[in-house]
Length: 81
Image (cartoon, rainbow, N blue to C red):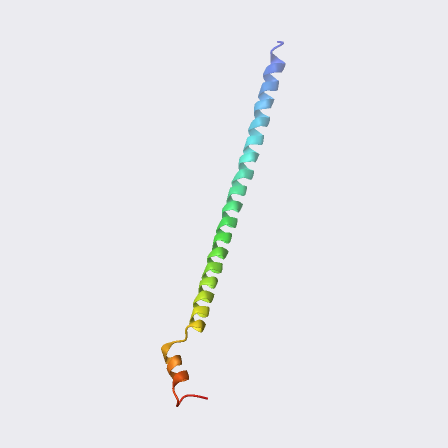
C-alpha cells in the first residue's frame, strides 16, 4: 500500500496540469483573436492613410500643373484681370 500515495499524487498532478493547459489554451485563443483584430484595424487605418496621401499627391500635382483650360484663360487677353 506504500504505492497508493504516489498514484494519488500523480493523479492530482495530471488533473492540475490539465486544468492549467485548458486555461492557457483559452488565454492563447483570446490573445490570438485580439491580435488578429488589432492587425486588421491597423491594416485598415494604414490603407486609409495611404489613400489620403495619394489623394493629396494628386491634388498637389493638379495645383502645380494647371489644366489646359486654366492656362488658356490666364494667357488670353480677353479673360485677364
